[in-house]
Amino acid sequence: MATRNDGPRRSARRRAKARPRGPRFRDRHWLYQEAVQSPEVHFRFFDRVFRERNGRPPRALKEDFCGTALLAAEWVQYRDDNTAVGVDLDAPTLRWGREHNIAPLDDDEKKRIKLVRANVLNVTRPRADIVVALNFSYNIFHTRDSLREYFLAARRSLGRGGVFVGDIFGGWESQKPMKERTRYSGFTYIWDQARFNPLENFGEYRIHFKFHDRGGIRNAFIYRWRLWSIPEVCELLREAGFNRIDIYWEDIDRSTGQGNSRFRRVTRAPNSEGWIAFFVASVSSKRA
Ligand SMILES: C[S@@+](CC[C@H](N)C(=O)[O-])C[C@H]1O[C@@H](n2cnc3c(N)ncnc32)[C@H](O)[C@@H]1O
Image 1 (tube, rainbow, N blue to C red):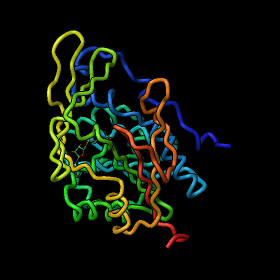
Image 2: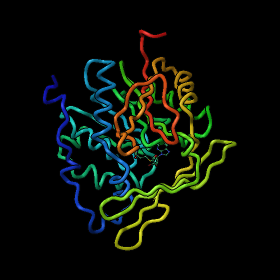
Image 3: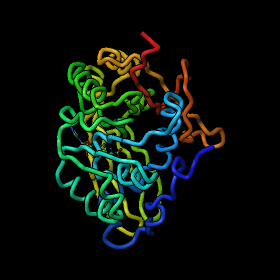
Image 4: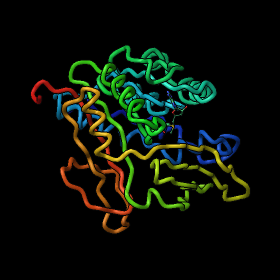
């Protein structure tokens, strides 16, 4: 049975979540957070996989590629003794995060979070219970050597029993030129798979926003990613010293045909046009 400290606290973001009106509504970071990020869903998953391996929930989180650090800011509100370090290269994005996600925290929460402007390859301290690389950000590494170097940095960032969590997407639709539209209150989020080069498994993915009254933001974000496959990711994690790697596959809701944000550990998976999975990597003394 979870104690109060082990259980989720009501999300301040949900409390603060305003109807999309005014200048924030026109802001690409605000729109991205609304459309793409669901920290509370991730936290349930982090708790579960860490608890399965350590019998307690994680406290110290390191969010690599943190962007506006929404996840890190929510993490320090989720439990009274959680701590978070967010790492990102981009100063304006971090500034936006400090202003909109860190400034509203109370003094105690602010003491438990730190944002660092740096390359994820160079930050391995303080050690964390859980290191996360979300929204496929590690795909910015285009060679085996550079991805292995990142995975090595992630492993060196972990304390005893620590886990490294990242998401992966794939399926034949992930390589197909297409635009996928999702409606939200006041705006539509457009995921644009602009081009794909099969010689390098290299794709250009863009995010646009269209406002329901008028106008929008084209090319709000552009990502140039190598699409790494699950076996490649697992091989490189092993080469970086992880010896326990589990894959969690997203369940599909039968009524909608869409992923339902519930993930199950699998050793086989259905071949499908589009899928999302998590890897959870750790160093276990029980497995050679
Ligand atoms: C797709 S966004 C991810 C934002 C957030 N983590 C999320 O889950 O939505 C990728 C972020 O990675 C940052 N980034 C790219 N290369 C990086 C590197 N080598 N070190 C640190 N941050 C990097 C970018 O500045 C950008 O904010």
